[in-house]
Image (tube, rainbow over all chains, first blue to last red; front, side, top):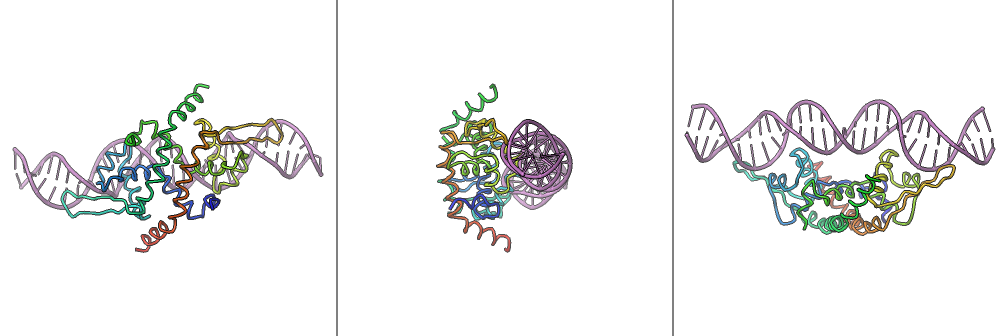
Length: 117
Length: 117
DNA sequence: GTAACCAGTATCCAATGGATACCTTCGGCC
DNA sequence: GGCCGAAGGTATCCATTGGATACTGGTTAC
């Protein structure tokens, strides 16, 4: 059923809130080709600050979407990698990003005409 | 291409930020069966406050995802309805909500074990 | 005259997001 | 031996957003 997503107490809603987060979406996209280091992610994802990226990665790791692997090296190296569960998120996320790319012109046109009208 | 979603200036990213909003997702779900009034939406979507719902609906209307139709009646009646563009969002959103429902157990299990461990 | 209906505002406070600076450890350079 | 830089974060502070609650306005039914 889909009605339970409307209930704030429902686990489905909790999951939805998490994966609906914009940074989480971009992290999944960044990791689709394999593991990445913290700095790589920070540089890839434009506009994210280290604090928020850390929060996002920790939360996603807690939810089993990715793993955090610390190498005992100097300078430190930490690699993030999607788990199978995280990989399975790619299909739905692609559906959304594909929609965004296909319809961005319509949306922006509507937004523009609202501003001027 | 998908790389441009990483650029905060990119329109695709702007669109992604909007449709990634949790309330927008729930509004689309609420409107999938036809037009709904403000109060119906507020009652259907658990936990939303009128201020935030108004903001969400206005923003979605500005982006061409739904229409706002005011009837000159007393008491006032306002109906919100998905545009064809908004309708086209249903498929990707279903992909995400379906994922959430299918994997909610895994996610919650991971979250629990993180808390205790 | 007063209560109810609906679709919101108005007001206020808490939480979140974001910008910037700083910390740590070690190796290499001068 | 002192200094700099690397990576992966914290710490601190402020702006923006989100959320809770109360209230408005026109009309009609009681």
